[in-house]
Amino acid sequence: MGYHRAGFEVNGVDIAPRPNYPFPIVRADALEHLARLTATGEITRYALIHTSPPCQAGCALTVGTNASRGWGRDHAQLIPELRDLLDVTGLPYVIEQPNGRAPVRRDITLCGESFGLGVLRHRGFELGGWSTAQPRHPRHRGYVRGYRHGTYHDGPYVAAYGSGGGKATVPEMQHAMDISWTDVREELTEAVPPAFTRWLGRAFLTARQEVIAW
Image (cartoon, rainbow, N blue to C red; front, side, top):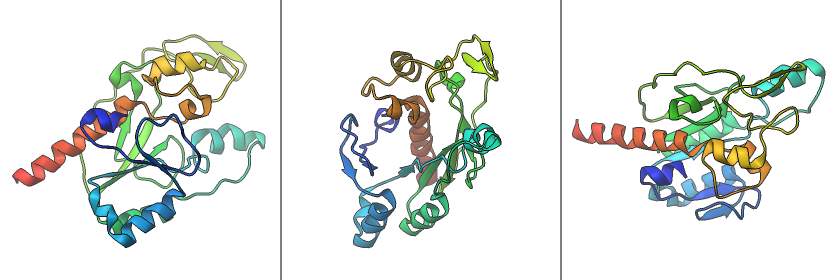
């Protein structure tokens, strides 16, 4: 949605059915689909590729709390293979990941406080084939609401992940991230706020215009 608001026509790809997705979407393995588009030359229809590969293998929760308590399971790390495919396309791209140990460069980090949102939702973005300046990261106004190690904290932000322990309700997540097109908890907990991708889309268009002007 953020890229749409920045002026892009958006096509999505997901291996799971996403009937709430507000734009044309192909149900496919994203890596296989990307390889096919590249092989057939169809990829040249696009100006920018944004990817949000599964984050469980390296996210802070998996490598932190879950690992320390023996929870969870093994997760596939797809980023190196994905990056190789993206480089073959020759197109500029974005790889998005949450905080943690995922093998990505964090060329840009965005925070909900920068956009007046009700979530922090820190996300790192590796930029391939283009660049832009890191925006200022404003000071947080308080805690994320919920329990931390058995202690409840109140605060101006909601926890848009998981359930229980003071986590946000579905309506709270929708409001905090400015997402109205889905009320599916799983989709909301994995979503990037549109403000983030709108900022990235506008930054990309500005960078491209600067290259053309130069």
